[in-house]
Amino acid sequence: MRFFVVALILGGILASVGIFTISRWPIEEPVTLGMMEGDALRGAYLARSAGCVACHTDVQEGGAALAGGAPLDTPFGRFIPPNLTPDPVHGIGDWTLDQFAVAVRQGIRPDGKAYYPAFTYEFYNQFTDQDIADLWTAFRTVPPVSVAAALHDLNFPFNLRWGLKLWRARYMTQSEMTPVMAQSDAWNRGQQLVNGASHCAACHTQRGLFGGLDTSGSLAGNANLPGGNTAPSIRTEDLMARGWTVANMAYALRTGIMPDGDVLGGSMAEAIAQGTGMLTESDREAIATYLLTPPGQISVGLPTPAANPTMDGMAGMEGMAGMESGGN
Image 1 (cartoon, rainbow, N blue to C red):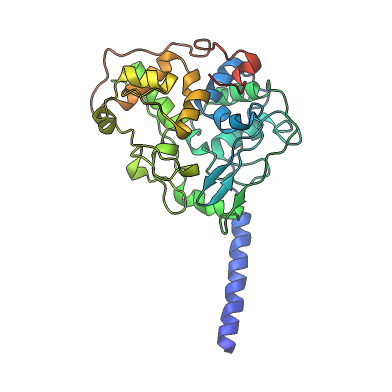
Image 2 (tube, rainbow, N blue to C red):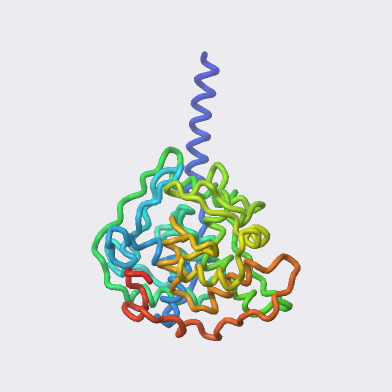
């Protein structure tokens, strides 16, 4: 009995030391962007393509742009997308550009704590310094909303934020986008959007027991999205088998109408209304080109994206640098 008590005490001490060590484990890589100037229109376009507006605006409740999104119900509990308006108390108004860069590309809050991977920061790691400055400038044009988003309501042990450091060490992956010289400009632009800003794998890839993406099944579909939604496979062979082409996919990313005349629903409908529906036609075609080009095949004779997508396809996005919550 005495041995058991001693072992229990020692175990508790070791566990406490371990937790303390993990909680002090630095994970942030310093960033210095200083007073770098950004382009609000380009930032607004990037915010649309990256899903910022769709996730952080509760359209169903008539919420203001970026003032906090609708709850995400998952097996780990309920996540609430926070207020990203320039309000200094309830939003990000008292942040610096450097803190914003660390949050977006590294998934770390200004206080040094990690964000939950419900925030798809692992897909944003290749945003350039200019991308970050543009996003920051666009966000600061949105009217501040002095309303705090509700707190996450997570199950134990997922409510222990220090555990995210272990999660990151085990599961965090970085988006990889190496331009392929033999491929068309459209294919390379599509790769950039699918694997980066538009983070298609975040929904269309199954997640494991602790929420890590199953990279071996990338884009093969996910039957367990928040709110009971599902996402089908968007691998090339599966898309082609279901009758998708570059033309009808680009059309669906604008309208939500599928080749068979049915309408995309659930979270994809929101992604279209607040995201892909706001993109340029060339960017939608680029996404389709990338997804519908079989591995090892060279895409030829397909549309080339506009050199500057910032100023194209901006109809209806002028107010608040394109951040209005009304959608398309």
